Image (tube, rainbow, N blue to C red; front, top):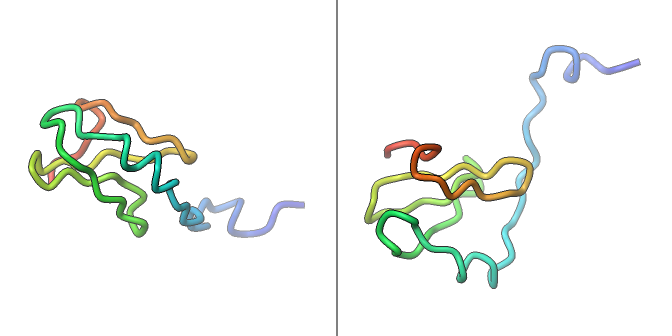
Length: 70
């Protein structure tokens, strides 16, 4: 039997760390600048582009059209 959090979808996503070597290899596709991992929102932030790229199920989605403006 599923618990109430699973039934309502209220459970929070677990925070995941990104391997520092992988993070250092990733750059913003728009500016080619560095990214900062925001563990609270599970996004990679490009300050220069003012974009936040989502991380879904541990996979960074590095598509400009998927990023949100910040």
